[in-house]
Amino acid sequence: MRREPNFLMLGATVAIITLLFFGVLLFLAGAGKWGSSYQKVSIKFSHEMPLPKLTSGSEVSCGGMHVGKIKSVDLKALPSANGQGQDLYIVVEALVDQQVGLRSDCKIRAEGPPLGGAGILVVVHRGLSAQPLADGATVTGLAPAGLNAVVGQIGDQLAGELDDRNPEGLLHMIKGQLDASRSASLMFKINAIASDLVVTSGQIKHHLDATQQGALLAQLDATLSDIKTITGALRTESNTQNPDAMLARLHNILAALGSASSSAAGMLQENRPAVASTLTNVQAATALIRDGLLPSILVQLDAGAAGSLMSRIISAADKTNDSLDNIQQMSTSAKHLLTVNEESIEATIGNLRETSDHLRAASREIRRNPWKLLYQPTRNDVKQAAVAEAARSFSDAAGKLDAAFARLEAYAKTANPALSADDPQLKAMQDHLAVALKNLTESEKKFWETFSH
Image (spheres, rainbow, N blue to C red):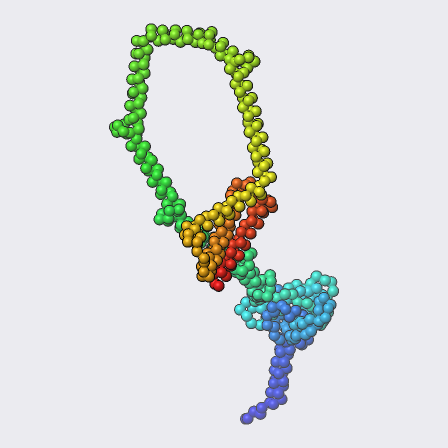
């Protein structure tokens, strides 16, 4: 007999299985009345923290156990912690099991896996406050932990140290120390030390060059050579086998002295009576000098005795002093006379020099052309005579210039070494030298004018 399917039982079974399936899902999701109860918590992190990647559905753990999950992650602008303006925060909304018992001072942070990936929230401490954390309350998250956070912090520190714009960064300090233009930099000091080493090595090389006469090694070599020569000479002179050596001569001299002293001792022994007679004669002579000659000498040396030799010497010395005083007075008078009449004497000497120059020129002209005394000169002769006269004038002016320069040079040599530029006689000689130079210039000009006509 064919059985009919019981659709009622089938439908009831399917309905029961479906209800059980949804009940299990609700239980696992915690949303059913049979599962654990959760509270909503908002955790805000500063955007400057090196957070791991947090996604919806990520785990929330406490003590290594699963106590909830992340519901959402948003980027929001919230009031800053110092109360001035707003700051950017990452706000994480999570569902945490109420059995954890979060307090208002709970501590929550984000951690990432060591090898990367989505991060999780970790309840570090549920808090010690007596006030429970309200549902939906906001908590400030701690700085992230884990290897990625440490690597991120190290990376940030390295980035700050390697930032050239950071004056306190390591890179800026290294670049400053490698700047050779800064006197306080390490590279400048290294360059200075290197330069000093180059100069020092060059000097050492120079002093170690035996071919350089002034080098230290050459001087040391020359000193050692001299020492070698001296020691060789001392060795030669100390050789007793060489009769010309110093030591051999010294032995000969000592031997000769020994022989001479022996001979002198023998002579004294042989001539002792003669020596005694000679000493007796010397004693008699000294007694004669003491008793006879010495009193006469003392009388002659007595300056108070009239007619003594010493009184006559003193009288002669007084007369000599008077003569010297007279000579000194005569020299003083002569010096005063020369000082008073210095200009007249110099003028007289100049006139005599000029007269002698004129006489010398006239005698030279007469000796050269004696016929001019009896001959009427032509115009050409007059011109030649004028040219000759101009030449003589130029020669005389040159002679006067030489004489003035010679006088000035002689005065500068004989005068006081501390001769000042304001000395009147020096200024007079300088003026005379300037006049002589002017006369020479005018004579030269007149000579060329006469010669060109």
